[in-house]
Image (cartoon, rainbow, N blue to C red; front, side, top):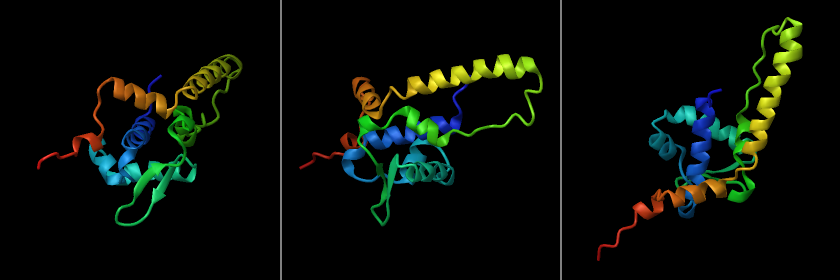
Length: 146
C-alpha cells in the first residue's frame, strides 16, 4: 500500500504550519514553494482542511493559514479522513470470493491504519522534527546584525 501523494502533501503542509506557527499565518504560496508544488493544487487541499476545521484561513495581505485547534488536538488520522476519497470498484467485487473474503480484509487493514494514525498528533510530529534538529523558519530568518 502506497501513501497517496495528495495525502502526503497535505500532512506535510499542516505539519509545516504547526511547526512554524509562532510567526503568524503562513501563506499557501510559501508552503507550495517549499514542497515544489503548484499553489493551485495545494490550495484545493488547504481549503478542504479549512472547511473541515483542521485549519483556519486568514484573509488579507498578511493572511494565510493557521491551525484551527491546538497541535495536540489534530491527528494525522484527522487529515486523512478529510482527504479520504472513497473509490468505487465499479461493480466489483462481483464474486463471493472478492466480496466475502478480500473486501473485509482490506477494510480491516484500512481501519487499523486509520486507528494508528489517529494516535499520532501534530504535537508528536513537531517534537520529532525538533529532535531531528529541523530548524523552524522563524529560527532561520532571525538576523542578529547590529
